[in-house]
Length: 125
Image (cartoon, rainbow, N blue to C red):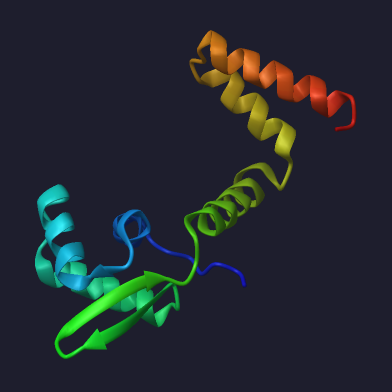
């Protein structure tokens, strides 16, 4: 299943849900009104959009709604990463990696990890 496009605000809602599911709507609203200073109605609207996009599912018990993601965070990251790669770098991975390596401060540990991965790639692993 291909992940639908979700906005930055919807992503924030999903982060709360991915980290805490199953979660009731009141907890989602509470978390985001505190963290982001969003109005409760804004959060409810974003939740409804995510349900319509089939990113979330819910079950109800009276007036209580319990939400679960239908798509994992990893699936969404993969989709967004691929979309970014295609839009910005014409689908070419090497220019993307070179850009970030050249323009991002890296620790010695991160550099060592990159070197190890590149050596393994060079050996065909």
